[in-house]
Image (cartoon, rainbow, N blue to C red; front, side, top):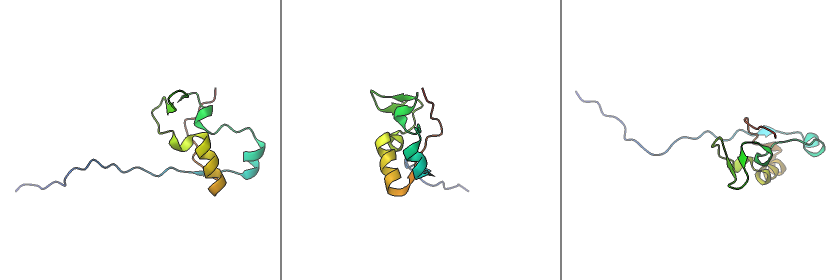
Length: 82
């Protein structure tokens, strides 16, 4: 008896980006470091992360836009401040 295996695909499942709620008072009053541009791992010339994470959702312009639309931001768990 031979076993039939499902056909392989090149599609990978990706978890959605978790966004954290941020207080509007904290966002406006505190000098929070929350974007790739503030991080040691960020390469400013190539706009990439040295840890090879996708930085698209964590860039300052995207964070600002996300906060203004929903009050939430995709905060990186590996942010290291200079």
